[in-house]
Image (tube, rainbow, N blue to C red; front, top):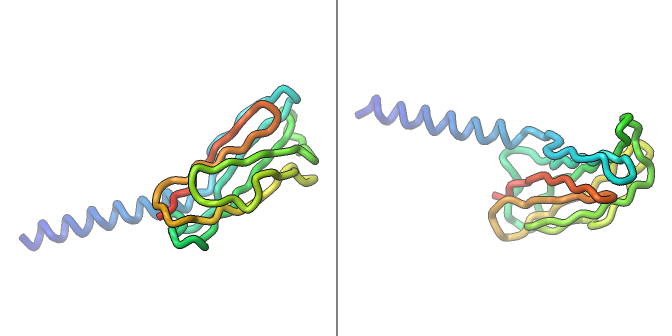
Length: 132
């Protein structure tokens, strides 16, 4: 009986560690393009742990990158954002000289996965932020 409990604890520990490790990965999850203007779009959700708390104040940083097919950053690209959960700090962004723009996603009270979609020209990219 004691051996079964130890095995259960071990397996639960592995599952929790895997969830934390996966949650800490900040990767450009979706890279699309080129657009009709020759731009490539990427989006990334940056958050610690397994996600952000559903307390209405926890935040994740949303980073968008726009560059040409030749990997030249695009200055002044107009990016629109939408989310399925939570609230965005800004729904319209303009890229800087490095081709990036950032905003925040603030959690709400609902637990789930917020899918944030960025659109530039005629292409869209999506990232996911768990709200726990």
